[in-house]
Image (cartoon, rainbow, N blue to C red; front, side):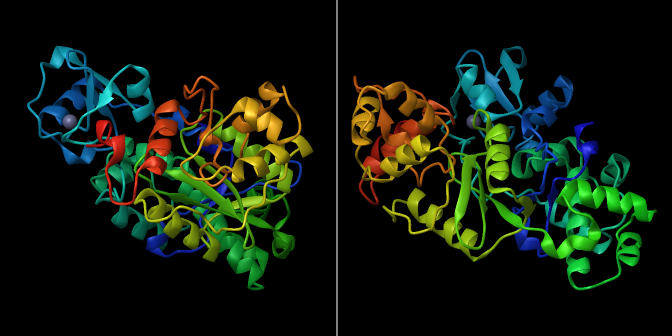
Length: 398
Ligand SMILES: [Zn+2]
């Protein structure tokens, strides 16, 4: 199981309202093998999914989507619409897979609108983690709490990019880091956080934070949060001073991009939140409600001189406008370099605020987008629409 390679994530603050916060940890030369959430998605058996679909079992919302061959529509398990013939149903683990399969979202159950979705079992489970952070919670323990291990795996992998067990271990190490910073003795801290030996604790700590427990005060962190949007969760990483990374969790190459940012900055990444991320979440909410046209969050995006010149130029494209790749090349004084501009565009570490979605092909067609063209289309529509109007998104989001 990939979750056994070590915890690169830990939650620093125990507050339940920070459930959606996590940080990826990794410093120095060790590579933070940030897990690819997709690899952890395992579907329940077809029989189980059919039963859940037919009985509209809400416990399976978010675990899978049901796509119907005859109508080419995909739904949540709880969709109130009349259920199709079982032989016409295919099951997919993510919205992305459904879209790739050529299905469109159902207008009744709105499978893309995940905003605010929190399963009711989550609070109890996290309370249990907080009650006994040093304990181990197995799949069997989960079943005894009436939580299906599938649900837990699915939820944690899409929201946090890790399995529940990895989350739990990360939480344990994050708490240990806090204790060490308060000056507690490292032998005691290891024992209190469920490590049976001092060397085991030292290894796990060093693997996660890049330094031994004795140097806990030197650990520099990039704080990471997940922000819900109508088109899927965004993962944002920031220092106390600036936002350094923001991407849709399911974009192509997400893991590689986050790892690149982490290495460029030479810091660890751990779950949590800070004032800047709170402000960001508020501003993203306003943007998606069409109440905000510009952001005032400070940004920091190290890259090559060429990349940074492209990213700076992107920020000068006003909301409601678009540019072609060619126009971008000219704007940065490199006429003809549209191909390299396209690549730098794709490597943009801060989606939406550095608006790479505003660059389109010279014939007016949308061109590519790392987080899938339907999102680019959605964002451009959102930005064209006047505040309060529905705009043409109505086609996708009735
Ligand atoms: Zn539906």
